Length: 108
Image (tube, rainbow, N blue to C red):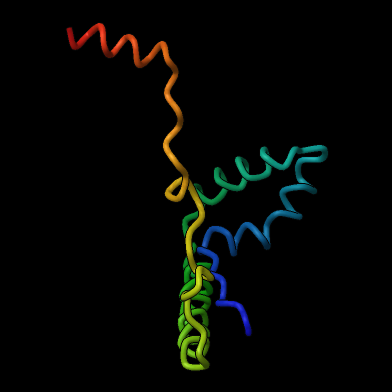
């Protein structure tokens, strides 16, 4: 069974993928976190983002088509394939005896 298509990248991430190497060349020895920071600064300063926004729209359309094909071929998010992971399934943390005794003191 094939996997569900991954969500498309935003215009910013499409642009950053193409600009990452140039940012590295312009700033030798820059750290990964600093590349992202510098990329954000450049992106915010850009006046014309239409090229990247158009690519993002195309990527979203391609994604939606792929999802429709996936679902038409019997793919679904049933059986936990599309379930989000997180804290929802965890049991609440056990409380300490101190916390329980403080609550008893307050209720008296």
